[in-house]
Image (cartoon, rainbow, N blue to C red):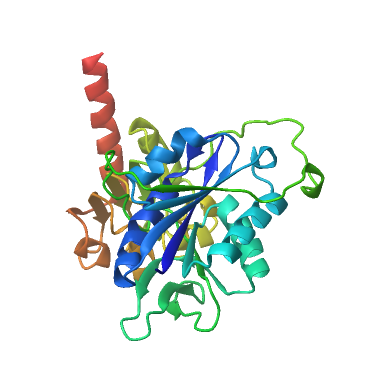
Length: 331
């Protein structure tokens, strides 16, 4: 039976949400192949998360437990994942396009002598050939390229977080656990963690529940200061279109779109964003979209749940005033 593998990214026993998203899409791919969903879990004494992996759709888990894997390092993790993939020969191998996942995937693909499609935004099975169709932005996001790997296995892809929804959790579901062993040695790792310094709060667009985003229509870098205040009041994150980033009004880490982050917030407020295809592809799955633009024909209004034709600054200031007034009254 053909297996669709999902790498379960975990750090200190906490599963990255992208792993659940991949288990969801893996169920669809496995169904089209008449196969099954299997998960690959590497770590040290992380048995506590096994039931959670089954609950989100894994039918089988290959678990490699070793002290050398107590925290992520490229060489031992690549060796462990590669050895098990060589042994069990999955048809498809999906890894989250996180910093850790990107580092791991390149090494595994090299060891397995197979292809790797990075930052995939769409996955499907060709009904005629049974091959995995992996679609990703190309040429700066101006076109979408569909890539196949016809002659090598597994077919590998790193998939952006928040592209696919998290499947329904079914706590009663159990599967087959296979405990594996690979010969690993501490001196092979080449690096050792001497201390851990928590990083300062970073931009967390992918998993933000509220995003306040600005585009070229904001007019200048100063406009983002007002949007940052609004985002703070809403306990959200600050986003931007590609044009605003290219104008150097805000950093790339805030960019939403095919060449930026893909997001699924509960509320997405778009100020001065025209809504080009490149941007819409990164935020169109938001639960509720509010768009403010002076152009009534702006494409963003085609997908907005609420559209306001008007000056973005007046709307943002009025919203900020109303929120603060409401909170002061409650207090």
